[in-house]
Image (spheres, rainbow, N blue to C red):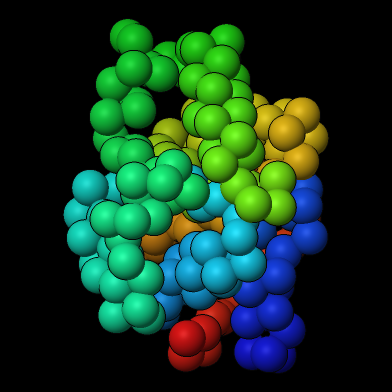
Length: 191
């Protein structure tokens, strides 16, 4: 099972929407590093929309895997964005601004595609995890639906993680799980 999960993260078909609900931070960081590192190794562009607390550990894991992050960031093939900062822009008054989200994400993806050697883009996002952690399930559902529209429009692969530990959720709510094409139940060592 772990091999199939590793394959899914290392070589996702365009338009895949993969979710990994987790309670082991180390496994989640490994999974993101595998997803991102595999894409960069194949000439794809990678966009990482990370919680501020996970940015450095994920970047550190990529550096440990041999990626020169300064070079990748400078080339435009890797972009790291703060999920918290995006929320400040996308949720004026606490409600998601759908048009703003689609326009902003579309712009980021268009820039990434222009830098990609293959024309492919992988996106990792955990904005939805931040919403679930605040028990905003309906807002997370709305954002996942917007992501599905972005995936269809731009033919990207999207990998989402949901942190369960400390949220009051033992599993990902079914309404959220059903919005994904693939669910990783356990990533094993992943990397």
